Length: 181
Length: 181
DNA sequence: AATTGCATGTAAGGAGTTACATGATTAA
DNA sequence: TTAATCATGTAACTCCTTACATGCAATT
Image (cartoon, rainbow over all chains, first blue to last red; front, side, top):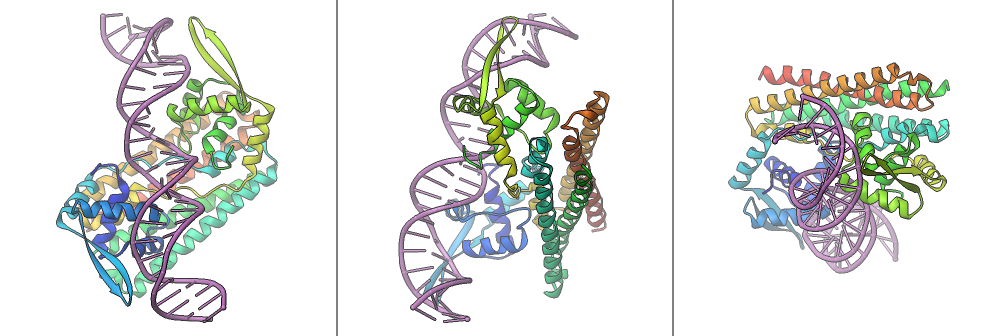
């Protein structure tokens, strides 16, 4: 498996939490890693099948009533591959921010347009902030403080909160600047 | 041209600053938009050719000594297309942060590994911060304060500075947390 | 009766990077 | 003379999303 095929490692990582189906994984990611990592079914299902062929995960078909779901679990080989990848220094994030690109070229458009964009961006940051707080509270209500994963989950949530706060601060500065134009 | 083909619009935007060649554009982006937008030659050259076919840009071959370079300029049609796109609300950024993904699964790896990753991340944030400051100073030395683009350039640089500061703050928190483990 | 949720998958296409190929010029 | 810079381009490949296709179960 290539060192750069990150979807595979994201999947293996999710399976260290608990065995689950592709459908469950999508939902779990949407509820936990959403603001820094998501996968679509178009990635998830084919790559789960590939990981099973390569014996990095095992599959078991389960019946929920009359419906069949394929529950995947990580194997020892999978754990080894994941641990290897986790030790590689993280690559730099893709640099592609549409909001910054649009503002950079803001001169070509009425001031009002730029203000609208920044207000939308601010709103999104507020929602991201709320969502991180909600997840943090849910973890505490569920008594996850003693889960060995808790520190790490806390760390990424702090990242979300601090990042969102910075974005809101920036938006406020920009609104000030643009409104006095 | 599709509303989502962002490379085309990034190119058109760069050409509102001044006419330039593909090579020059790559260099200019690396010196200005680098932390929020970059393009590779594999994108730049084919798309410049396509924009020329569609008359959104014009081309002129220039001789620098014996070397030929193709200098592109934006046309009125190009300006109209850009203005249209700039008015669309910016899409949300791709959510893919390798550092957060690795830390989220940090339990599967020795503490030392996670500390290394976060220290690398901190170092990168410091460099990004320095770089934004350097660009800001260069703009001021070049007397760009009265360029109609200046406010917008200032805004995105403030975004870079505030974002980098937030990352550094987060890294310091994480180092504290992980070192007392 | 209709909608939402559970559940799996594929096809097509756009987005993006890397490596390769070529060759002149300039500075150390 | 060697390396860096100027300069253009293509091919192969990975990555990723969206739309489509299917069908049962549970809720409203």
